[in-house]
Image 1: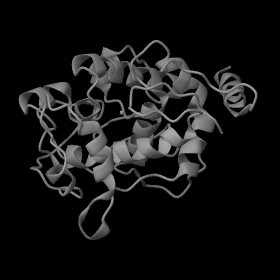
Image 2: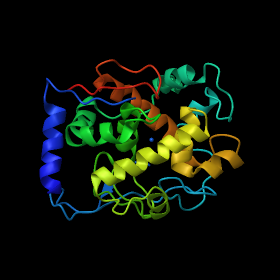
Image 3: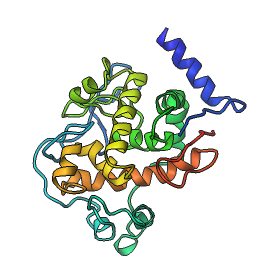
Image 4: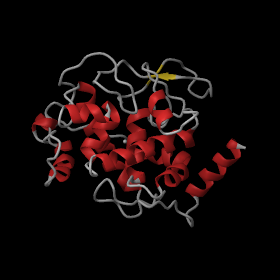
Length: 259
């Protein structure tokens, strides 16, 4: 029955006359097996840096500020409460690294493939929330690259990489189930949007490191993974917005996926 629903959902997303409508959050995943077409294959992310509290993904081990995008945070304030003009600056800074460096972004075709498989589930989960489908698509890309069976070394599972505590918190009983996983991830993002007054940088940092880590550090925590994760998701959002009939200007704007 689930397979039938999944096929029907995909057809709904693909139909040019019936676009998906909605009202309106690490690290790359590495495969440990060659049979990428097998439904039983599991993918494992490399160990990642830690913070005092876990977000949707668990963060293990130590890690001071650093990482691939240290230059980014010299241009964008990581402080909680700094709002005026920061989002525009955060987007512009993605392409303003030293010697032409840019924050890496996924391909449009890769994100389109995720929408073809899970667009209907994303649209359903985001209805009535503060979370844009484009934001969810960007988070899925950064978390699992669209692999519903992704499992991190820290035990985070599924498309939006939910750790068991987050799954339980938002009433997800099977994190490997795409629909449940998306619903749980969106519920957490929506809670974070309310908690941090729709500040996308704080929301993404909290999704990765936990809301308590953001609060105790008065902003984006100085963990390597989190400092890389936030610009990585923002870069994915700049691509994801291109799949919206009307490209959103901010991360809470609505999105109707077009293919």
